[in-house]
Length: 339
Image 1 (cartoon, one colour):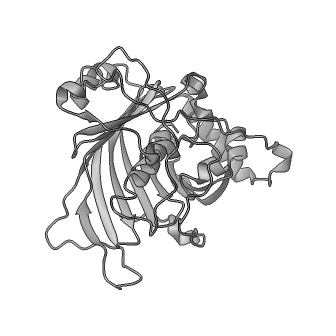
Image 2 (image 1 turned 90 degrees about the vertical axis):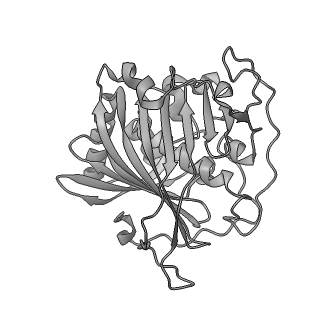
């Protein structure tokens, strides 16, 4: 489940950061909230102006107020909870594909990730150039032609338990979003970066409307719809394919609030709970401490937080002005995440 925390963080912030650069939505969003005061740090990122801190979404719903779930779904959620509780360290590779339905554009990237429970993780991504004469399988509704394929940007997303560092490798810039003390450690499940980072089955049902779309001996497909406005501001719905042997995700698909961006992640889990993983981290990511990279000495410059950095940390935010209305819910065939 911890992988999904990073997936939601990367997908939500990455999509919002490009609003205004690529005009994903037809109209601009609301102005950014004021930034919080600078915070002191002992390392190379000291003096950075941090984004508005996360706020805790309040889940006041009682179980007897929710629609009942099937015994089959409840078993999947409980098994997922139990298996996830056993994962302490995890490392692997992944690919990401982002479909922009406004510009009929497909962007691709690949990279590596590492997770250390309860609240540390890192995702590195580099763009992947399309092969010569390669065509997208996604066909545009307006043009009737395959989407144009392009490589995505180089980026890194690092959660060190105290803050989230968002690095743009192409522009050699980075932003920082603070994690308040009451959302650190195991309490990170209460933050607005959702998706069950060790979340109990009961809490998951309170926060999300979860339906079981497919279930067999090898995999289960879940559709996840946020109940809270603070979560709905970041994504409209998500689909998760679980490996029934390990209950680790095979793939995740997320749809942004406007319905204009669709992001797919495909995971290759390489190692779980290997005690030597932490010792190998420096070689994997090229940093002595992968959760506190020395960005300044590598030539990166601090970029002041934008509304993208603030938006994901604002609980109960209003719908941005000018945002496109959500599209109708996809049919069941939409969960078949095909490359």
